[in-house]
Length: 395
Image (cartoon, rainbow, N blue to C red; front, side, top):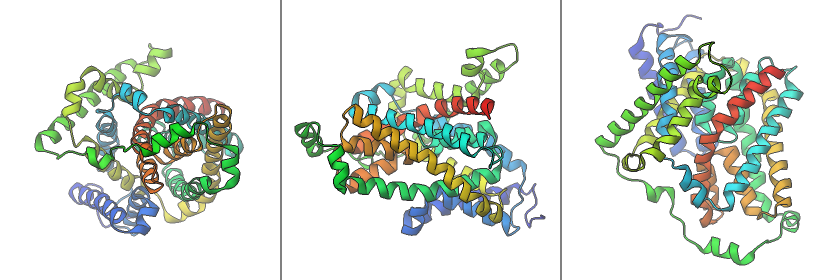
């Protein structure tokens, strides 16, 4: 279909992408209905709208710039301040409960592909993104979509389905503590310990924000470009056929290497990482641009037709996320609240975990939820990538 804006009219294309990303952030922050839909879905729908009405082209060199440069930069921008040692020390019992939920996500992904691969072409290509997303979040979804290149319509149908099933899953999890059977199955293991945890006042992520200066922005972008450039150059070299095995996987895959170097940066240069600020805001905005982009090649009709089967796909993954979390949690005698927060953070990311902890007045879970959500960002790319390799060979 011909578009009003030609593929080489890059100024108008970039203007549209930036404005649509900004509009989705504004709508999510301003109106409850869009907050429930999530900014990611709003951004994708705006992208679909701009192309389906014939305003933007479905292909352009501008879009290639985003895939080639903007998407990789998201990873170091969001991970460059995260010290792994701090996460393990401060997350407490939620650290271990989180990994039960992550295991449930992996098992659910395998089962979902085994059951549905005959009905959805290229399903194995979207599984890495959803596995990473249901352990980490949007950053993992973005990176693994770029790494495995599933069809655009499948990506968009998955986002629609994910947001639909996520709302149902959260409602169920939030209601669980008030169900008598749940309390019977998960009685207090250590009432004294739990009362201390709830009485403890934890700093909100909002309290930890600092003023973003011009130097902060320059430093964040400089570090992100350095890490990304090194990752691209090294991965290009080690992706050659003469390298194989572990070397090829760890050093020849751009997004795996990006994650590793981003994780090592705050460990090797803790003082530099501590002084950087504003990196997360820039990274999140880049992700919103990406979500606008992936909506552009899709048609409303195709996404609506494809969403129901992908709804089942997402539901299977979250079902096993729940079953494994609570079955193994019961075996290892975790508190009900630990398991609920683990399931919420893996499936919905750190900010959903923080929001629900605040809403339930579980103050001591605010910072651990944030930390474990960030830990999910780190391990999500690894688990999603290796799950993708295995499932692509199986199906």
